[in-house]
Length: 182
Image 1: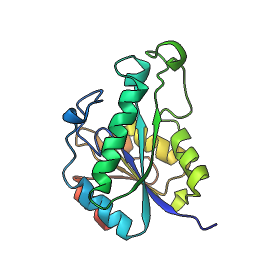
Image 2: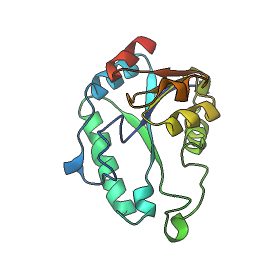
Image 3: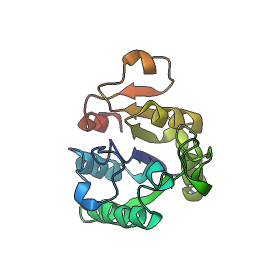
C-alpha cells in the first residue's frame, strides 16, 4: 500500500475564526483563503484532515451530537467547493476541566500526538512528508512529536522565541503563504 501525504489542519483558528467553543454553524466564519490553500494542496495530492481539541464537549458546553452535526456541515462546505476532508479527528477530553469520563489526560489531546498517529495508522500517511498548520504552540508540539515533516504556525501573537528552537517549525504571516511550502 502506498503512503500518502497529508495536510493536517487545526480547526478553530485555521479552518474557522476561533470564537471560543463554537458548536453552531451560524457561528462559523471561515478563515480567508482556507479553501484556496486546501484546493492547492489537493491538486498537489495531499489528503486533508482536521485535528481538533474539543474540550467544550468534556466541559459540558455542547454535546457530541452538536459536534458531529457541525463537523458534517464543515466537511460539506469544503465538499461543495470540490475539496474532500478525509476525516476529522478530535479529542473531547480535558485533564482538569473535563466532567465525568471526559476528565482525563488523553493521548489524543494536543500537544500529544495521538490524533496524528491514529490518522497515520488508519490512512497510511507518510508523516515525514506531511504538513501541519495550527495557531497554537500545542498544535506544533503535537506535529513534532508525531514526526510531521513541516509544521506551520499562523498566529501573530506567538513570539518568535517560543518557536525558535522547535525543529521543522515555520511561522506564517497569512494562510496564503503556505502555498509556497507545499
